[in-house]
Every structure is written in structure tokens, then in C-alpha cells.
Length: 289
Image 1 (tube, rainbow, N blue to C red):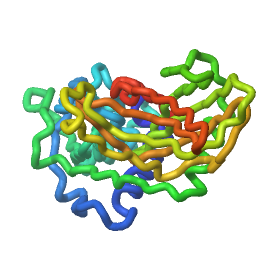
Image 2 (tube, rainbow, N blue to C red):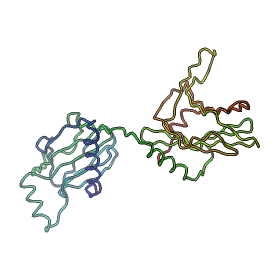
Image 3 (cartoon, rainbow, N blue to C red):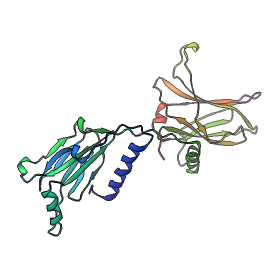
Image 4 (cartoon, rainbow, N blue to C red):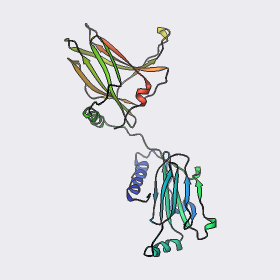
């Protein structure tokens, strides 16, 4: 049943967030009298068809019930009532007030006032949500503080590594691994491990991230764009056998003609270096947590 209280509460919180955060949205104020009116009769289901998947539906009164027979269709009807319930329902019917239907989709919200129609022959059986009934939902992008990024990073470290690394390269008795990639809002978290199988400790000069051309025909044609993490969990400069860290980036994209490069560089004089190539598909397949 669509009418349960938890969905109403979720809707209320969502609307509050959209309206209140930093004044960034432009949702116009609407009153019940401004809403498009739909006529519905006993025994006739109303099907509301959306151009995109429906996230959830709220029915403002117990006079209406419904379900989602398909991801973009909400089916609404007048509640079947017992004799004990019929008095209050009848009062609403007499006042031509069955309630308000609110439909929340991925990018918009639509609302309708439902009127009771005694003559079934004129009842509406299906409608498509029209552009004039759509109120855009512009959920603001949240910026996390360093303390929040730190907490997310620690949560990743606590996860057990059950699978093989997404990417791994070896050379000079060094191993570089991407354990996993996570996404939270507009942030990308790279969980990385560096291993040293030699007896010589590794002094980190830099760990560099960049986006570069996949194929380089001439050295002068290579275009390298540096990617700077907005946060890293640890700022370690040396490790003996293993080193794990979380690097956080603001959301980025790159075409198939380019790849992400990660380079681990050692301080001179030893100067051991190892490089990894990351495909865009590795980023697209990121988990959420």
C-alpha cells in the first residue's frame, strides 16, 4: 500500500531538504486550490503515467489507496470501506475532497487534487503527467568537510577486503593495488595499497594522479592533466613493507581515448618508481557505502 506513514515522512523530509538547503532551488509555492484536478469514481482505477521512473507516491488521506504496477505507473483508487468507515468517507465525498496525490520522480514532483465523481462514465482512467504539472527537484550537491571525508575514509579501511584488487601492477619488488573504488555524492574514494617485498625501506617522494592520452603517437602530443586529491587519509612519507591509504577526489570523467595514471615515485638516490593505468570502467563500477 502506498499510503503508509513512513513514505509520507520521507516525502516531507525530501521536500524540506529541497526547499531549505542554501536557497538553491526554485520550487514555486503551490496551494491545494492551484493543483490540477482529477475526477475519480468508486470502482474505477486511475493510472498516472510518468515519463521517468517513480521514486515514491504519497496519498494525503486514507480515502485513497494504490500501488505501483510498473516503475513509471501509479495506480490509484477510492478505498474500499466498511459501514463503520463510510460516514467519514461520505462526508469527504459530499465535500468533493478525496485528498491530494503527490508523485515524486527522479527530477520532478507532480501533485493533483482528487475530486469525487458520482457518474463513472466521466471518470478519468489514465493520465500522463504534463510538463505544466512538473515541479523540478534540484537537489543541491553536498560538500563534505574534511572531518566527514576522514570518517568516510576510516569506514572504508574497516571494510574487509574480500575480493581481489581491481587493479594491480608489480615491478622492482614493488606492488601497487587499487583495492576498491567508492562514490559518495560527488566524491570518488580510491582505496589503495602499496607493497614492498625488498629489504630496503621505501621513501615516498610523491604519489601522482593524472589523466592522459591512451595512445601517444608523438611525445609532444601527449596531454597530461593533473588530478589533485581533495583529501587523503594519511600523509605518510616512508614505509617498509606495506602502506594503505584512501585518496578522495571530486567527481571527474574522461573519454575512452584517455586513461588515468597513478605513479608512485621514490626520493633520490634510489628513485624506484611504479606506474598504474586505470580504465574509466573501473571508476564507473564504483560501489556506494
